[in-house]
Image 1: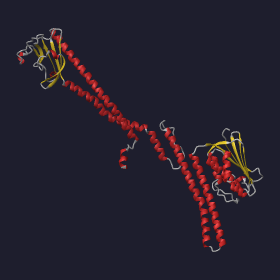
Image 2: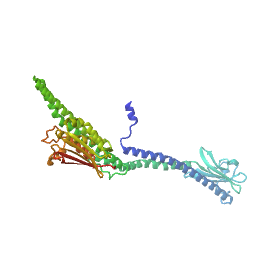
Image 3: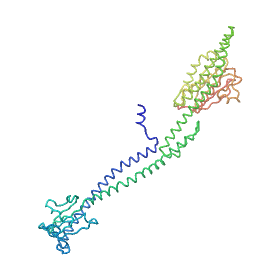
Image 4: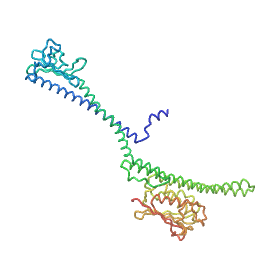
Length: 473
């Protein structure tokens, strides 16, 4: 069933073939009716012209006879009675069989109905009746004749005739004249149309060639300057799609690298602690190794959480538009989430912000991850009974975020390195994984913001200052 449906909806594989066939079909649909209409019109006009010439010849013949231009008793011409008719006397005009003369002829009758002149091919034709005036079609010796009969002012009755074979031959010539150009021209038109379509689709072929030559992972956009107006939107959309695809591949690659890099060590440590607990007979040693395994699993959980946070941040930013967000609200939500950690370390924590909301255009997932990692770092590196302060304020059209602590701080010569993935300070006594500030850096990039690491105004520690564009109040 599916194969039958596939055949039913199949199309020519080539766009060039489809366009060529459609254009040829349109031309055939248009040209054949036009040719038929033209043929019928010319055939009608031909018949009218030949009928007019037949009538004109009859009137001219009658005038010649009436004025004596045709001798009715010429001893050099045979008499009608001598040619086989004993009732009529008149001139018989011979016709020559080697040309078209047998296909035309005439009869002339005097006012008394006597035949006074005729061509030899019509001499035996019965005289016309009064009802046979004008144009008539008659049969004579198996041939169809077109006749015109008139009675002129001298009361002479003239009948002039022409065989219809002439008209059939002319009509056949018209048919050939109308069909031969189509038979010869349509294949030529098909070839020219195919070449024209090929040339018209050249931008598509160029685009295909450029895509074939494009190396995997390339972020160079496809040029659209060469393309016509109909192709440019396609190239723009294709560039956007390729950029999104490369971003997605990069995110997947980074995520896989992060997982492989960061989960190997804690998993190995956990397995070692559990194996030690299984082979040990000392309850104290078993308790110690199990506790170490538990701590390794906790570190592993936090590491996975940070890796997933980075992946969610990048994926969310790629798929969502920026929205209008209140920085103070986001900071309050993060502080409430970290309240147990603040209480556990007995740290003096404060949040200072303006009464009026401070709005920015951004990604809520990224800004939440930024606040969480910066505040977590400050809490982690600050000793018990230390101090952490978060301040949010407006300076003109810029939103400024300050997070400072009185922890050990970071030496000035190493402040740029801490934003690299998996970078850890050697002297650090905490169990960080080098992803926190990398997440912050990514959030900063997504918002076209800037970040500075300074000396804390609390005498020691670190001040992290972030500046980004603020929305109108």
